[in-house]
Amino acid sequence: MIKKFLYSQKVAPYVFVLPFILVFLVFWVYPLGSSLGMSFQKIQLGQEASWIGLDNYEKLAGDGVFLKAVTNSAIYMVLTLLILIPFPMLFAVLINSKLMWGREFFKSSFFFPALTSVVVAGTIFRLMFGEMEGSLINSILGWFGIDPVKFLKGQVTGFIALLALATWRWTGVNMLYFLSGLKNIPDEYYEAASIDGASSFQKFTKITMPLLKPTTIYVLTISIYAGLAMFIESMMLWNGNNSPKNIGLTIVGYLYRQGIEKNNLGYAAAVGIVLLAITMIINLTQLKLSGMFKKED
Image (tube, rainbow, N blue to C red; front, side, top):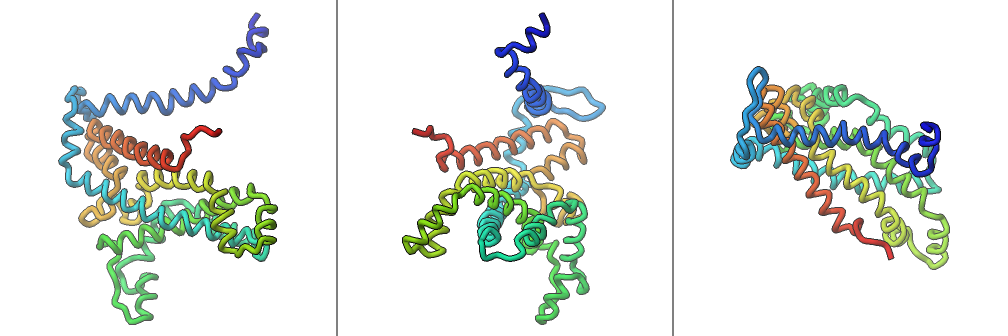
């Protein structure tokens, strides 16, 4: 009877889907529901939790440090989108070109930074952008007669260091996404365009970019999430979660500060729920505008 049940064509699909459903419920739905409930409570280790309603969210609305963290994360997200979508796409097109030599070497070189631990990468970039005259970046500036800059103590210069780290680390990953998308574009399209006298720029704008739209939307979606959820890079670059005047504080960094450093778990849960809401709103909006929810004819 059991064997017949397991081998049933009606039951088989549910058996295959069951592991995903269990993982989804245990590692996504339950933590989300638990965090949502915690966000309406005052929870501190060693004390009994108490229900406080919307107090945590009302406090967040007037919390200047939280608003600073949201601003930092938003700026970081926008700037990484401006860098980590067009440039990886351009590099992918160049590497995919038939005239490109050493293709595998360049693919490996671009992807190698992603294999490096973010802790190690953050430490190296902190030393590179150090305020001492002997740090790498200040040494280079010294060749041009520029005085040493305290990169990690200024808002603009701090973001330059943070973006340099993000660019070095993630350009190769996004490039590989675009390379996989380029492999799905038939060569016949480019050959037909060449016969019609299209230039390389016209092929790129009329063939490559439109057919890379699904890949671009995917990279855009994960980049929005990665930008808003960035934490470890900032923490390692400033050697902790307390940058000068909070110039490197992110939303996740503020969540960590409240939940781990200050033991205010309920307030931290509210920060996490707000982060999820912001991420979902931005991503769903861009997916809607890009036409991903339209039904195909």
